[in-house]
Amino acid sequence: MNVNLNAADTESLREVDLPAVDRPLREDVRRLGALVGEVLAEQEGAAFLDEVERIRQAAILRRERGAPSEAIEAELRDLPLDLAERLVRAFATYFSAVNLAERVHRIRRRRDYQRAGAAPQPGGLEAVLRGLKAEGVPFDALQDLLARLRVEPVFTAHPTEAVRRVLLEKEREIVRCLLDDIDRSRTPQERRADTERMRLALSSAWQTAETPPTKPTVADELEHVGFYLADPLYQVLPVFYEVFAEAVATVYGQDARLPPLLGFGSWVGGDMDGNPNVGAETIAASLATQRAWVLGNYRRDCLHLADVLTQSPDRVGIDAALMERVEQYAHRLPEAAEALKARHADMPYRQFLHLLSARLGATAAGELEGYEDAEGFLADLQLIDASLAANRGEHAGRFALRRLIRRVECFGFQLATLDLRQDSAVHEAALAALLRDPDWPERPADARAARLRELIAARTLPEEGSDATARRVLDVFRTVAESLPRFGPRAFGPYIVSMSRSAADALAVLALARSAGCVDGSDAVPLDVAPLFETVDDLAAAPDTLRSLFADPVYRAHLASRGDRQIVMLGYSDSAKDGGIVASRWGLQRTQVLLTELARESGIRIAFFHGRGGSL
Image (cartoon, rainbow, N blue to C red; front, side):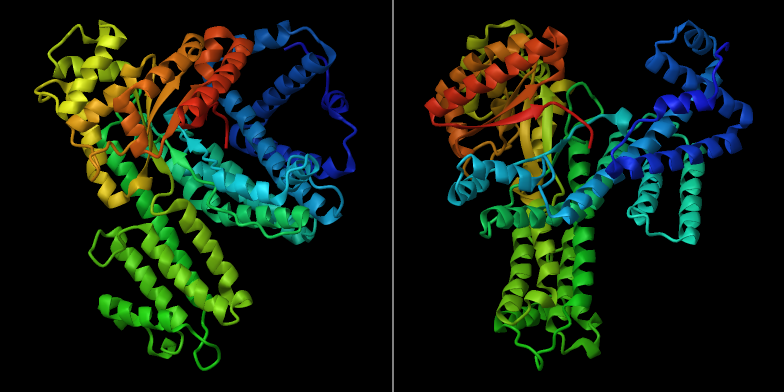
């Protein structure tokens, strides 16, 4: 490559006059960048690193000085495939390291704002609350709003992004090293040790294939999502509420009652749209895996609390109700009671928490001694909380207990509700087979809706026979019916119907569910049906679709059984591809306004599921 420049030239291009508060970010980027270079030289040789540097410097020169691109394009176009692959990995490794440094810097900047005691961080909770107060929103109105607020980030299904968990763990090790020195308080010896830890993570990651030798499975994807749900999000959830409550107290001078306004959803194992590997089996497996993860976390928390709540009755009061519950559980769980240590007999909280852990274990194993639902476990924790509150326990362990209570309120016995999604065309194909009507998908929407009302009233469809599509669709609803008694009503989120274009697409879900026996004790289908409007034309037609649904007596009865709430999913990517960014955003905004007005006129509460996508 005929590019005449050196490292000094490009470094001069990169010298930006950063504010003092951002200089630690530059230091971290340089530190990691140097480490990546050392790893590349060690693993691939000095010549490879030289090639990386030449391409990097030429790219900087082209971007910042407008240099001609022909030379670099010719160099990249003529690369052998193996070398090109390694170069892509090298740059990806560098950019990943920079991203890690930026994440840590966000934490550093937040700490800077918290220490300064001046204006709150822009975009933070306190800044938003100050803005609301300045606009005249009183505390009572804020409290009412929080009671109605529900925010639910959803992990959607993208198997190609299922990064191996071992690589995520290596990234986390690098972040830990940067966090340990976030305030530049490490000694030279500690910094050298940190550097070696990061070098180890980078070197072993370079020697590890990013993807398995086989195509990622739903189980791989579930493991990827579990990395975030079962660990960092589980850990930080109560901290979010603590920060929120503190911000309200700072701005309004009053303590807010924060309901469980945050939850999580997942499509992993339930997104059947276009993926024949997802169905009844993956739905059951996803529910079981999530339950095992969260119950394991709760058991660890209980055992940790058992080491904290060591109070003795001869030193402080213990509520009689809790003492009675300990006795009940000792009889109910004799093996666990026998395992309790005699020297802990004067520590009722500790004994109770060990018994709760044992009961959670029984829950995971599906034994009779287990909890029926998360509410039972929550009631036991609240019994401890009430005893601590009444007996000078505010600073003797109640804070840690409240964190576990927050987690149980959010996650229940499932880390995330499992959303289900299927294309309306699959439902039409299943109905065509069940009704022995090959022309079913082509029939007018009004005619299909009228026939579906008859089928819903009859509560049955013909047997699926040998048709694979019909059998797979009905098996999904049978699995939902079988899972709800074990996993509870919070196990499932909405049933999303992609490519929804008429009321018949929602009625099809009710007809198929009833045919599979998926009804609750009130003979209602126990799922929210959520039409997904994706294209520009679908968004424009959405008001007419919902108007006909709200006017349909059969569907209106279903809505009544679901608390008169309608979930609507809005697709961003397809509408953008269909009509462009501007047309997409305008159509989405206009649709939301019209559907909100329509729902209000119909006495229905509407909730929007924004399929906008984005990184963690």
